[in-house]
Amino acid sequence: MTHITEDELLAYALEALTCDEERGRIAVHLGSCSECRLLLEKIEREIEILGGVEPIVSSGALTRPGIPRRAQSPDLPVRQTASYAIFRAAALIAIGILVGLSVSTKIPHEPEFLSSSYVTLSPPNDSLTPYTASDGTGVPAHYYEQLLEQKK
Amino acid sequence: MSSDWASLARAQQGDQAAWRMLVDQHHARLVALALFVTGSAAAANDVAQETFLRALNARIKNERGTVRGFLGTIAYRLALKEAKRIRRNTDLDGEDLPHHAENALESILRDERDCLVAEAIAALDEEHRNVLVLRFYAGHSYEEIAEIIEAPLGTVKSRIFYAVKSCREALRQKGVFK
Image (tube, rainbow over all chains, first blue to last red; front, side, top):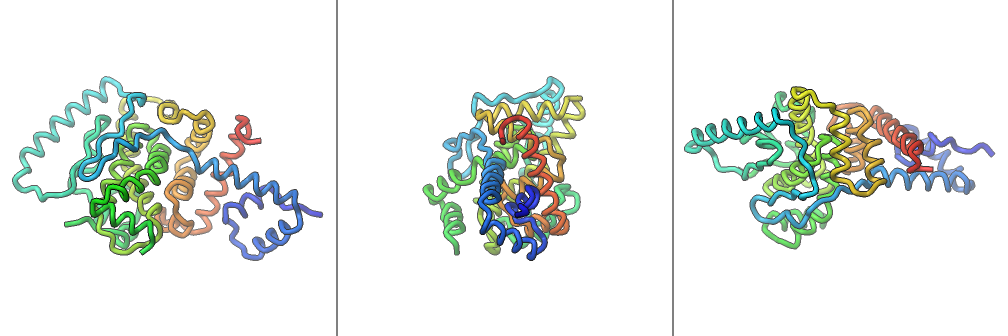
């Protein structure tokens, strides 16, 4: 009996086969070959492990409503160099000045999320819906436009 | 409306239990997603929290796909932006990027097997790693991934195959997989 190759079984497990006939051939073979079935099960377990990495998170620190508290564990070291720390401090001061200057014209929006490792995750005018080419993430705008819009 | 979308809607309206369920179901996975994309433990936590914040404040136009995919998409986009910012700042400081990523993994993953698996994923090049992350951690279908990264469906399947095969071989050499 000619067995299915490991690569073929991997593609089958990942549902990455492009040809229906190939998929059918493998399925038929698996119906009668316990050795290939066992190998497929092993591959599926390994895929599950690859997709199951679980970081340590402090979910209890996330409160609702409003601004979530930082889920910052004391065990998590934040690696910073002196120059980066100075840059961050300068950026914080600059942002504080800019916010003070623009507060009278600022449109209320969701709270900005400030982190100790960087100033802001996204600028105040960043929105998932009016996605522009300067966003730089490479995710197409229309994908988000179909999903959601920010509350006005 | 599926139960997941209904839970999100209730969380948006202030239901604490729905909010707690949302966090319990998705928090760790979103942190993992962001960790693989940014290589920074601190950024990963922040990306995950910002993701929940945006999800709570978003008006859903249509319930396309799953809540898992919806949150994963937000987190992925935020993580990409943050990764770009970190790369700019880290390059200026002259730090060794792969070393930085390894330390980030060790700081947030206590399980030894998870550390080795995460290292294998982190060792992939960006385009293969992102497809793996979008599939396994953002919960997207291949069609959705193809749309997000603007690549043909065949390319997506080819990349996920290569990514998983590479990781399996690396982990076999490290003794994680037999």
